[in-house]
Image 1 (tube, helix red, strand yellow):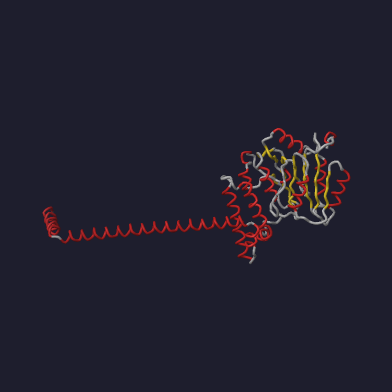
Image 2 (spheres, one colour):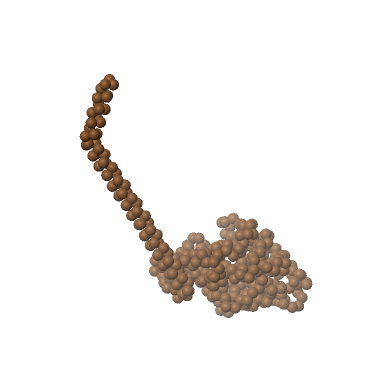
Length: 363
């Protein structure tokens, strides 16, 4: 941090960080914080969520060595990642908020300066982000850049509702009020992106300035190996997430179908899990998110009525075709009868005799 950034007064940027059992990674994260070069003062507001390894000791070391930067909380009771994050977020004092969890880190010492400059110069933007390197601890998968989208027209609320293209340690927000935030939701990062996006546009700086680490201690590490196990654990908070998002954007027509589809998908997943494992997840969902449950039932009933009408309409079409077929068959029968009558008539027999005589004369 530059000497001018140590000036007295409130910080311009608050780095909000949470940690839990990350002794193998957190030093790299904290080093990337103190390495930031800025023309303004910034703070690191960090909370360890009652780790059982040496993570608290490492945080305490940095708080002791950089008392003008660090404001550390070392919890004696585990709150869970979302509640721990909300507590730290509410403690932040900066005009802007930058996020980085203890197992990730920044690679550009001018990251904070670049993002703060962007928000300073674009007051109609509520947040800005950048691409990140994604690395895997086991080296089994290739390093990637996320997101790989370059078209800034894609960085909208509508797209964000369908796909979280903002990695947590790449974002900087214009600070808002954080009271009355929803509890027990997951993934919290998607909610917090959408929460800030309601206050302005989403900005993009096309520079890779941080690393997102995939490792065995992460929640989503092996989700692809046992999807059912993941959903049994996190389906309810995932449903709660979209119920909370509904309160942010549900009254806007362009977002309504996306939110409804997400909620319906989660209820259908809960139904599937209950059938397969005899769980009571659906009952818990109805208790935790009664409005979402009622709206899901209403949509299912409407779809059933629509399907019933569709089947009725198809039955009517089939009956019409059957009647048309019967009419055609009757017409053919009547025509055959008329032909038979003509062929049995004296005039027809006389015509045949004349035809035979003319045939012989021609010979």
